[in-house]
Length: 216
Image (cartoon, rainbow, N blue to C red):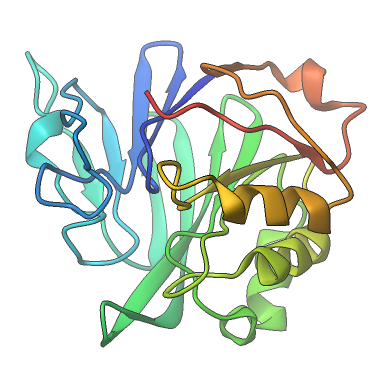
């Protein structure tokens, strides 16, 4: 499995011939800054909130790829990938929204993508119980409309993942949210990776390891 980060909550997960994408943004997004929006083909696209920061799917049509789009709660199976979406409420850009948390089983690895989660209270005991302990947890840490670094640390403890990948923080202005999050987790520094290449067996001995990915 190869995980690549493009800033915001835009992530690509490749396993074999299957490409999964989470919360793609376009040129009009607050995450775009001066970066070009990446364009490539995807098999499955996950959208957690219906907002331009997360739902620009058109750029992921490439060649023969015509992605299956999942944009809400429910159970799905696509190309051998098993998905459960759990509904939570959030406020984003001043509006009350539905945010879907996705639990994804792909190539034997259990992913949990929290999306634009804004409050710990939104994650009920039923949701925690249904998701269980993921191998890899994608957690927003930027504060404001999403979890603060402190709240992100608490939710990470609640899920007890093997690997934690922070997302949705401002990389341009000093990365203060990332530094705070690492401090909350008792880490002074984590060297960023261009991408994470990982197999199921690599996860066996890990508990709460933080992986910071450079935005491409």
